[in-house]
Length: 286
Image (cartoon, rainbow, N blue to C red):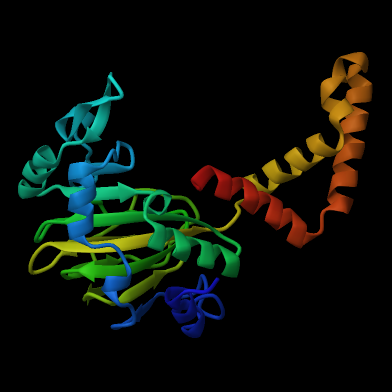
């Protein structure tokens, strides 16, 4: 199943020559009406059973105590905590905090359809987030994501700062970013789409009023993910190796594991190996 966003990313070379090389801003390329709105988010927070950690509140990277933005509800006769308290959230946002939604695709069908389309197109695992930020505030400190990032600006404007100088782009996520001088600075308007390669440090500030954007993080299998997939394949293919290792001497175990590793590497071509790793990653995120 295709989607307009996926078609755009493909047309702009983001799934091709641009991938992992440079950022791209595509102006007016998305229709915000195809995505989520602040009105729907407010409705869900007020009336649904949406529960932490599907949402959070943060300011300059700091998260207050969960109880400061949640409440207890009676669910089938049982008290359950962690549900959204819209009045508390509004007070925190009035004081400058950002509302963050996590894994939006778990409960918002249009976003889930986009995730499926991306995962059908590229060898990545996709997570989804919404950042609804008050005027001239930011939710996250300058940081790196251990993934590629696609942003769709939905409401208001946001000024983005990138820090892509030599030595700042790395494979791991982190806050150890030198933000003294951005390498790039630009403002996203509703309908603009931004692509950032893996590990490009950035932050974003609401500009001229409240602002909301939707983020897709596109994560490729890491060496650790590939090793885990190989381990799982070997265990599945050799149940006796795991289930009856006690019947072997230590020397036999080492020899048998070595032989199983060699067989596993022979059995897995690169495409199958990647697919196994992605399957595990996607189960964890979806």
